[in-house]
Amino acid sequence: MSLTFLTLGALSRIIIFQKEIIKDDLLYIVLFGILGGALGGFLVGKIPDKYLIIVFLITGAKYIYDFFFKIKKEISLNTKNHFLSLFFTGTIASLFSAFGLPGGSIRQGYYFSRGYTLQQVQGTAAVIFFTSGLFSILSRLYFENLGLEKIYLILPLFLPMLLVMYFAKKVSYKIPKIWQDRIIIYSLVVSLLSVIPKLF
Image (tube, rainbow, N blue to C red; front, side):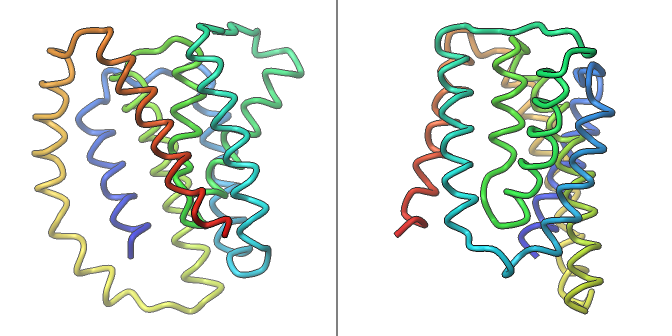
């Protein structure tokens, strides 16, 4: 149910931030996100969470480092390193989400490290989360034979989500760039700290 709620939230962000969505690399990350979402739905309960948490912490720390030191690598799509980065960001981040980890932070970290704005990242990451989340839900419904009854209870929340996102977008453009950067770093750090207790 929580994944369904977050997926609906991503859909509301797509609608509100549609003009800010970055098309570069989007198709690749979406396809990798679908793969990661489907794998996550299948692997939940089959591999230890601690391994994924360690990978999550290392990856998040790297993106914070890249952003903090303004290491924005504009790499050609044809290079091997860039393709591996897209694969990791799309597939592994979606796998994190399926295990209840804030995989969206990893996707956002990828785009922030490339120098995109807060609004561009919100719109682009929402597309990725929606597709991967949808396939993760479908995968879990198939493999775990879950019912749809409780999911229907979440659907009425979609309209309030749209309204909140609309006003959030308006407010975001009034925030000075320096504070947007601080919000980015703060959100990434908080997402990393939030999973540390799960290691113990």
